[in-house]
Length: 323
Image (tube, rainbow, N blue to C red; front, top):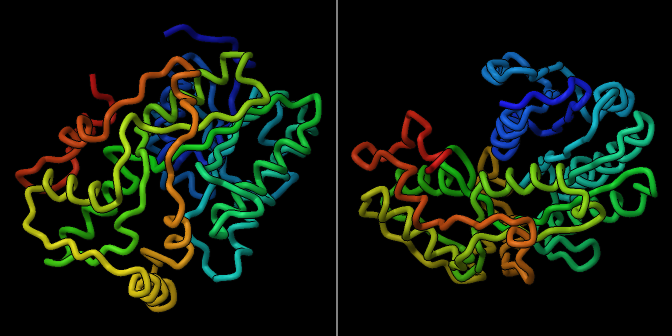
């Protein structure tokens, strides 16, 4: 492994999450030092096996703390995101997506960090997004673009639904399919182009090292388009389960989302999720190709994700780095 100068430190906000864990591994392998702030270092101490990785205890929503975290960093990466909020008025989404994005830009200015990589979402739209999630993702993009000025070179990524062996919607639907003999499925016709988590992480690494990606936005999609129902059926087939998948009409789907939103602990599916699924999560341009990355197929990789004899994720994590 080529070791870069110690000053080449990257601060990854959200580095303990689904995409973040893949990205920090890629950064370390590429020879970077990586700083991953977290509220709970003890829960994520497994990351400390990575050479050159720091795991400081910190609240990234505190602006003074952010500036200290970014001190002497070459770049900042903001992966922090939520799919649901505790309330229902959008304030939780605004705090995590919009307010934090603005704080990160200001902290980059204060710490003189000239490179910022920002995770958004496909179909993010500050004004016309159908959900709080998509609107606030769009507003966060606006904050990054308008506040970066000439001193911060940003790159924004807009992925479709992200999948992988150790998280994302694959594991979510695997749990649901194993939990009951019938799975009611709202928004069954929702279209998406699922993109592999490793390909998303690779896009960040390529952009970090390629000056031509500065002040640009990239849509990230896998090579194939599916309906939500098709994806769930593929997962069911791979698990070897005999489960009924029940297409739920739109008005009942909305009612199901409302009940899950207000009555079920943990909000496994919310009205905001339902509204997000009303727009197709399909790319209009091939951002991965522009970055020199060939996206990997959902169906090809899905066969590597489970030990189908037990219906569980493979314990060795072999699917996370397919050859």
